[in-house]
Length: 198
Length: 203
Figure 1: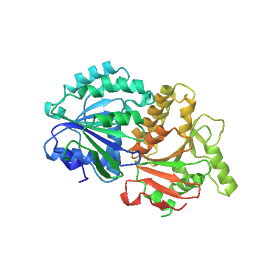
Figure 2: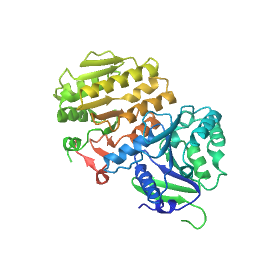
Figure 3: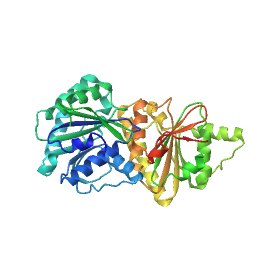
Figure 4: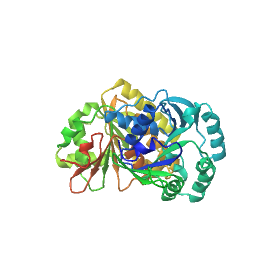
């Protein structure tokens, strides 16, 4: 198991940012988190932005690894490939208030236990069309991502492709995350954590 | 490892990104793909006649490519090849991209051993006014086909001209990334096989 991932599997609470470059293999960190949680009887809710779940599963498949996520609750934001148990889809992205309202409605359909563990794939693809517009990114932080900051008792793992994200997006997410894991090829390094470490 | 040997290790369903420059020897990769798999299995998706400079390179190098290779043409004026479809890349992207996707799906179900070569899709981005929405739509269309075992696909993208985030989206989605230098070397930058990464292939 990669450094950092083992500790993440045990935390009861917190925001975890997993950063990677476009030529890295973040699908392995995803694989280890999903398998680790599954072993502990935890079935996460997956937020699949623009078919990133499909991309991760295909890259795993050609490396000879498969994970069965057919029963996992999935919320689909844009994209077309259906993987897992899709509870609903959201096509509205740029009207943040509307987006959050639809999201809340769909998320209620997920089992209560799954809502405690959320994995978001394709973080940079949500603000992709306004990446060069910090005022809009700030509004996105305020209305979408920072809305969940005060919620306790949940683990949120966010996957971010740094080759695509703007510096403003990356730094904003890093600041708000309790744990930051950086992926380099197939290895992971924990570069931010609270207190004494994990 | 020789390029032809490397190509044989690419599995059905995979998509390979070949990042070249304006001065690199990528025409030789194009030729090796065709001669390794057989030109009769090749489908060329040609953005604004990008195949023409490659064919001229072949002619000037004394190599030949049959002139009945299947071709989807998006823009340009050349009549080379056997036309499967022609789309107008200046039109509304919703229209020409869905027409194109539908045709590809049909073609793959009728020709389940296809080797697709996509030439310089990055040129569509300025044609569509550098629209961020279009970049995402175009890259996502490529991601959806990854894992479709009726085809293997090779993308040729000029990394000196491509929009950076477009390149990033393709690199993330595809199973392999090859980088061409101007000194004739091909570096394996991403591979499903860990020990292949950072190795070089001989052209």
